[in-house]
Picture (cartoon, one colour):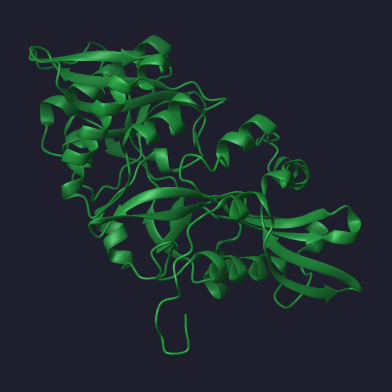
Length: 372
């Protein structure tokens, strides 16, 4: 922010932002010079060494991250951005000591397209957590990230979010972390027999080639343009979202579903199904969807198709993550599913938007997470 209180000039992402490190801060600690800078593609191998020395060790169920997953997860081509701060010791390799990374997501908020951050893979090497100014390197990284990427300018994040369960108390005290909503599934056993669905609608299972096609892209873009007008806050679920988030995921097997009018072929909704181990091993999930909140027939058809897959996969439980206050959750609950407690929560860090808006009016699904 300038001295007169005006928003700082916008900064569009350029090749320099993505491929050439921008130094943000430098300090000396324990006789060592430490640099905080933006993360770049060349950091990948050292970044992965840092990650794999922490998460699989602290949480034995977490696998090591591969180069393939990193390339997809922090691909700048989906949003045109890579927004990440790393702490580096230049004289040791350079060696990455910690990172405050985000996946930059395009978001529809307040009637315009902006971008926000999904903060994921926060990390500091065990032996370096108290390094630098008090209370330690995690907070220093967070403050530096906020100064570089967040604020009121149109090229800055109005908010970011995540599931920083181990780091929540530190973030709450020093980085303005606030609990936005509970992360509770709407879940239950599926009916033994297929559910009745409207004869006027039909289901199409989408393979990757179809999702990547120009025909589907035009339909998906049109569906998003039609439905976004009722959303106060939602990730931009146009063709680019479905293609990058699901069709191109290098590890997880997602099944994409289209609901169409039988007579005209018009697209009424899109959903994504998978089987994963989040909170419960071998569970069927409705990961993401885009459908009009009052289109009960399309909602029922999409859920019924996921139920068919659940019976086929013999997982025993079907679940989705929608806020119980979200109107889109009510049709699912009316189909017989209930809210289960998970003891997880979503953290929201705002640089403008009201947290009550995010709690009550954010169209939020598992698609915004990296949990399955």
